[in-house]
Length: 81
Image (cartoon, rainbow, N blue to C red; front, top):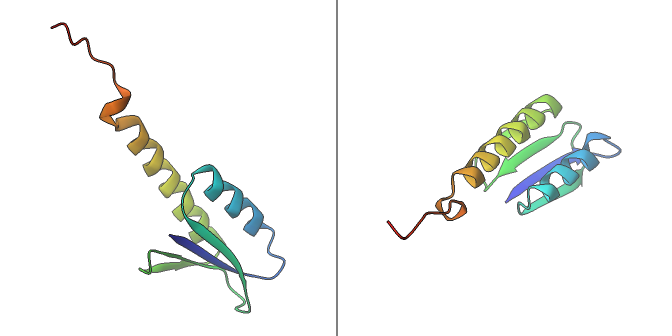
């Protein structure tokens, strides 16, 4: 689960929500009274700030795409051999 808490009226919040929805990852994007945006993944270490969140999401997206490309069930084998 990825949780992003952001200050009210932060324009990037809707972009983050769209990206997470496209990745089909469990997530929450919530308004917070804190002045700085923060992201927490699976109750572990978080990242703070817009740039850090964008960097995290970029890497997460890259890792997810790589995992999807490496899945064995995506490859077809000639079973007649």
